[in-house]
Length: 86
Image 1 (cartoon, rainbow, N blue to C red):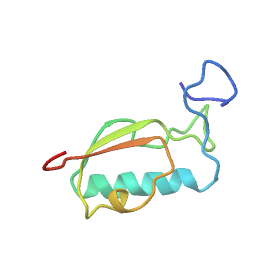
Image 2: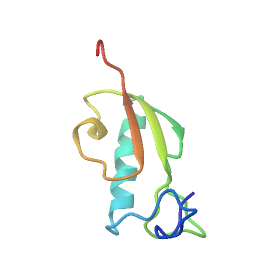
Image 3: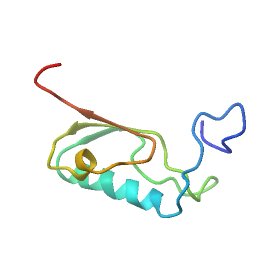
């Protein structure tokens, strides 16, 4: 649940920096363009929340040529990278 971070029923608050939502979206868009799969979230939700909220997102199929594998996300994104071993 997203909302005001000090509300006890909220799991995920807003992002601190105004342009961070667009930055996170650009990382997701780049990954999807290169073959990654979004399982949940993955796009800016306009409407009631608006502002600096980005939905919690799970994305898999991440490879090292994707920006999301090389840059810090600083957002509610779980990027799954497959490895050959532990």
